[in-house]
Image 1: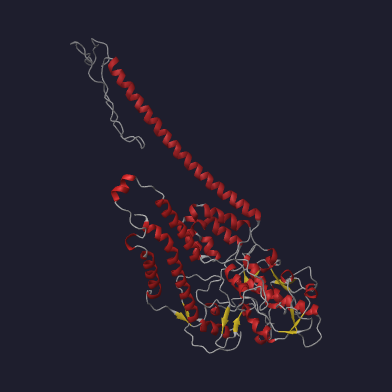
Image 2: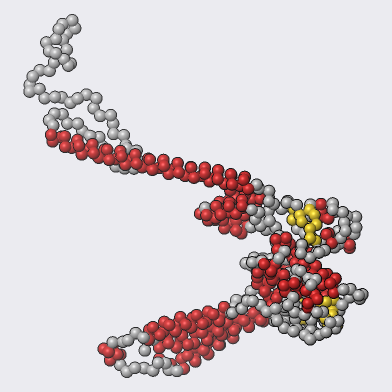
Length: 573
């Protein structure tokens, strides 16, 4: 029957799609294996794990990719993993640690391992040191991404999944999980954060470096795990909780959707009854397998499998580079380090507020030190920068909100404000659409004037008084509205005048046409009418300056008398 091929297709189409999906995953796995050694090189250069023997092929270049949140180090606390593995740890009671922790307190739902000191250091001191280390790395990583870290002092309450994922990574890094059933004081080994904590960060923060260097787990040739633990949490082998996201292969969803769609079409076709006359004329019914019988679907499956394993794509040389893209970035831990004036670079530290220094030296003289948490005494302090400065040491000058607002108000329809803020891609899109037909322009005017917006790094300086924004916006939009209304009124008035003139001329022509039949006497010829009444009427002349000859039944006309004599007839002459 005509519907038999469709009926068999809806059964085997999902199988074919799944085969191609499996082939794609196999190709991806092969590509990852090809560049596995280059990832080992990245982590070896980062100081994580032992040296491995390399036969690096390099990283591939993606010419159409756009990097996003690709910073160095790519993961928060990445460079501290090797140091944390080398120190000794001891089992500690969870309740005892909770009393002295503030930043990571909400995440410590497990028994925590604390560093084993060489001297008799209290648990409260150790817990505070680890909590301060986690807060410090959280603060610096947010600055590396261009965030305003002071806005996220309570990351658990944030609506941004990226902020939460960074918070979890730093807390799981500096508060490793203790072995289940251990006693207080038992010596333990360091347990790295689980792989899904890192994967969640990459996904939530949309980390993209346009090469294969962004990898949470790397295994050396000797079997040593470099980077984070290649175990999904929660697990006793790593530190971290389970992922809140459920990943479903897109190919599988597409296959199921295609199967249901095709099956629905086939079922609808089979459900249409055929008339008895057409069935008798068609002759005996053939098997549902059609011409090939039951071997047709099997043949389709064999061909699909053969194509999957034999066909190859285009062969061309893909550009390579030997160093990961994130490694080429400036290390923000070096960029934001503090070196006391007059001392060598070897004395560089993070956070000038951690040392007892003069206030004029701390925060580069553009701010002051402020406690990160007010609920815990002697909490770690960070720089609170002045209005026009940003970054952990207040050395980066912010862009001006006044400039951003003026660019948006007078040039925003051409994307000038986004060019100023450092978003050239969005600026070109705004230019191409003329400010989204005006809507995007109005939205950005309100957005840039209402408060400090994010530039490509940090927020703009809050130097625009609110009353200036309100007055400027109301004035400009009032003028724009007045000009538009005036132009609309003048256009409407011109059209109404033309309509009235057209109507008057039409009425005059109709009225004079009737007068010709009612009155005797001279006939006056009307000028040519304008063909287009929407524009100005064409010039048709001034008409006759003298009247036409009047019939006089043969009587003589009055003529003027000779000079000095009285006339025989009364005028007019």
